[in-house]
Length: 241
Length: 241
Image (cartoon, rainbow over all chains, first blue to last red):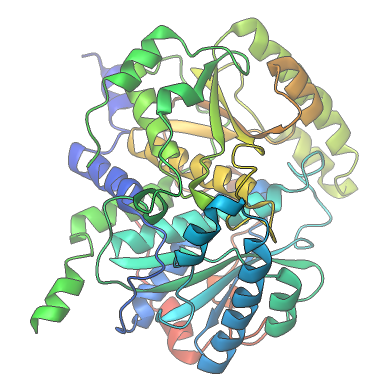
């Protein structure tokens, strides 16, 4: 191995550290029903929020804020917003799936240790739209990267996260006093859990299957097959952790 | 420690594995100028794409596809789309920052080992909008979570990723044959790198500073201070890796 190649290898994590990153990715779950009563200490929560803050952001604008919601009354009001929205959403689900939909557990707003609303301030870098002029949604996307950082760091800390998207944003903004130019990108339930299931709940409940990965990969143009080498490499992947 | 508490602790990774996850988060960079010529083998690329495929998705719809672009001619055309967009964007940057903007390196389209376009098929689960009726952008957000998984796994593998958002999406869709109902969420440059800088390039180049985390945290309502315990815990965080 020459010195140049050795230098390149140095950029990769060692095998155990790589495995830890993949383990967080593969064993992360969207938690609804497995929250337990244990609190989250402040230093752990601080580490998770810092992980979110180190997400990539377009033009390094860091458009996010983090609203920590613990008050029981306020959470009950958020749950009311959810319950109303679920009724509205159910009418739009295909008729033969409505019974299954009704039986799904879709939030842990009051059972989790705390709620966290991650917002995007769309005016934070108004003067200099680096990377956002053609694609103004990039600030929202940056905020989503912060959510995913939080989620993966939480998994490593043994903390469960559930993203509740069945909410009317107008009602949520009114309840949390969020101004016009700020978007509540994610409303998260965060807490200790009894365990992390090995597969997503919607897969276990037969709402939908995991799609075969090779069919999702294309080469050069949309709809064209992926190249043979990559397709074979996907087929040969060892089972995940 | 009682048996119940012990069981809860079992959900957390051990110290080394936790540190590996945080290391991926803190040392991930948006790469533009540090790509080297070395190729990426198919099995590594397969692992990264599988990591993306294990992102959370609303209603488990898995709306993503992965278009791998290697062809030099096609990449030159993407770079032309970028160059045109950069000229248009520059006119909208505050006048006193335009010289700095012009000097920033903003893409590695032709220098990286390959390009990857991650798309969102907005019709993949049209019949059953679980979690999307009130917030139809959730399928785009799920796709962004896949991007962030890819990015963090790549960091662990020693592979650099740069997200190019200065592109006209209509021109990109035409070039890649992407149909109307599919959104190219992220156009990524992916390749081996000479190294990962310790801070974001836009911070080093004084485009923008990292914001103080405690100022971004609020309690109960937008604009209200975070609680004292959490604020102190943020101040007491040890320096990151």
